[in-house]
Structure formats: C-alpha cells, structure tokens
Length: 333
Image (cartoon, rainbow, N blue to C red; front, side):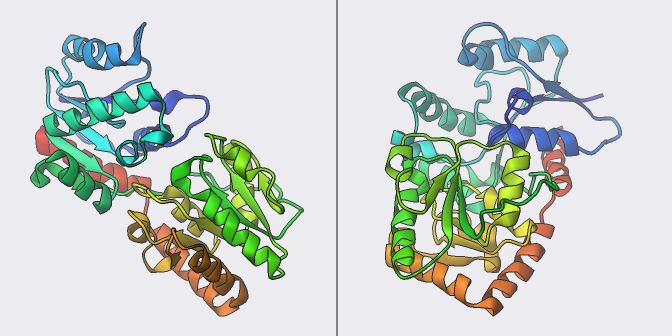
C-alpha cells in the first residue's frame, strides 16, 4: 500500500498559526482512499531544524519506505528517496526581508527556491503565489497546482466584547501588514467624528511601539482562538490593509462570521475576497479612510457585503482542499 509521509511538525505546536494551522486542518480533513495510507511526522530530531529537514527526514523516509513526501512549509528535502510535494504559501521573505530575522530570512531565501524547483509538484494557495513562484524562481507552470485555503477558526460562543463599536485588524504588527497607514486613516476618521475604536489583534513584531499610543487604538497582542473568534464576531468591520499576502485567510474567517470586509487591492487579497469585499489602495490613506466610511455609513452596502461574504466563505472548505491535495498525491503515485 503506498504511503504518503507528511512533514506535520508545525501542526502539533501549542499555538497554531500560519503553516501550523494549514498542516493541522489538512491532516484532519484528509479523505480515506482505498490502498493509500498517510504517515504524519509529528516531530523532528535533535539539533537544528535544517539538519532534520535535509538529512534526518530523508533517512526517515528511507527507513519507512515512504512513497511520497509532502512538505507543507516550503522545506522539502532536496535529496530524497521518493517524489516530493511542497506547499508554498507566499514569498513575503523575498518582498519584505526586513520582516524576518537574518537567519530565518536566509533559510527561506536559500531553500524555498531550491525546493520549488526540485519538487515533482508545487501546491500554491493562490494564483498570485503561483505566478510569483514562476516569475521569481523559474518553476515550470505545468507542475504547479493552485489549491486554496479555507476558514479554520472554530466558531465559538464566548461573550462578545462589551466595549463596542470597533473596527478590527488582525495580523502580526510588522511592516508588511501596513498598520501604520491604517492608524493614520483611522485618525482622520476619528477627527471627523468617528466613535469606533480601532483594535489591532496580533503579536508585536516591531511595529507595536508606533501603534500602541495612538488615540483610540487598542493593541491586544497574540490571542487564543476563542478570544479571536469573539473579537471577530463583535467587530463592525474587518480592515486588512496588508501590502503582501499569499492568501489572506483572515478575510474568509470574517466573512464566515457575517463581518463586512475591507481589504487592500494588492497581491492575493482580491483573489481571495472576490466580490465580497470593499477594496482600497493600501498606499493611499485617503482612499483607505473613504472605503471605511462608505461601509460604515451605508447599511445597504454592509448588508450586501455580509451576504456575499457568507457565500464566499461557504464555497471554501478543508474537505475540498484536502481532496484536491490527495489528487496531487495520486498524480505522482
């Protein structure tokens, strides 16, 4: 029976984010297939991660006679005893190197292009990421498969915040998230009489000092899933001004909860949001403020965004994502 090994180390962390959530949801939703088995690799070996990924993991694949390896986090072994599938979520480390530590950025920029070129199949979470991989790394389009993400944050019943109303932005406080411009747009609206607070939910990755003391702005830090779900459900709108996203999962998380979405007209966000979001130029503070004002002041527009958002989120599921991923495995088996 063919065995697909999945490097699922990120799925077993205590606080799932990004790749970890992707790996976790994929493992949960993988469909049973007659004559096919899965082997989730939950932990690496002693020493640096890079040593395990490029030496320990191939040894493990040989020992267990795996027929295929899927690396859901860019770091596919370059020398391996079986065909390989790699998922590339985005190339933010190429566009915003300042958002990454020197060592982490070096690892991404060194191994991701090599993994993408050597893989038998490359899964990208959006057409934008696929085009980026082809353009930057010269990867053959014929071996790329675009498979989108889906909402994964569990709907909870925790009480909504009692200090409403507020606008919400979610993401680490780092330059590519473009939160300084959002704070500037919010300050203009506040000067015009807007009573909403602006809540920024995410770990401080260097921008917190510039945002924390702005009037009306609340920085929450990293939140657990139940807290984030409640904060989302209570928001009057989600504003996502990011300059670069490979997918933009937070858009569909908000849509699934009936929260109107405003997003940057940039990278993968229009692809993810479709016609269910209000878009703005992320480099134009005036345009950003005007978009927020349009959504807050027009009940009809809000209702339409909610309706379309429900439809957009319902069109995505991890079961569908997993089925498409298994179809990629079967191409190689």
